[in-house]
Image: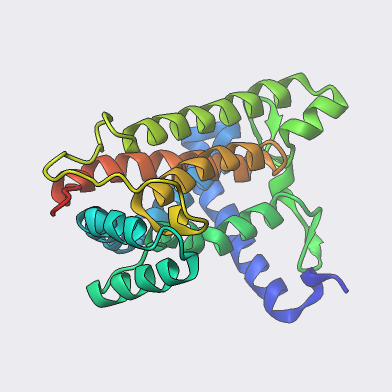
Length: 263
């Protein structure tokens, strides 16, 4: 069964198509042939603006995890030989403090439906029974419906160049985000309290701990670059704008909610 034939999916895609086409028409006098790409950028900015409260909640949660870091280290030291007890104690600590180790994933999860819609709009030649004019739009000569991998296979030079630049930019922003989140980076955790040596790592503990979670979220930035190699250029453009917004938002909110550990 084709998901696009489902009434709800078809209605949502058709509404998104008409909205994006209308926005492209408005931007055409300014952006010319890149109007649809500009529309995708504006759509991304609008979505991220709506998610600012989620970003604030995320920054607060990261601050709380940093505050709990010494206590998490103590739990790992105390229960290093009992992974299940460590997992329960860690969950209980987060619950008691009213926070969660997974708050950093909220913006990505909230955007998943939007990315899916953009992906579908620039993938299918027909939307809700009518032709898809969005596929005729380009960015510097590269069709917005093409992908880096597809361009490599078809020998499309504009697609390879433009999509390649977008993918490299996503990877660069991911690296900047990773460095900013590491000790010694601009978002590094101030050493206001020593962190105990936890000894050998305990399976599952690193995922729930602050540093372990930060490493996992940093790795997701590079996973995003890999995904961008396969999705349509329009979706890659959306991913580039959103990861750049994420980095800027983190830098701003970290000043408001600094990561400070307490003993």
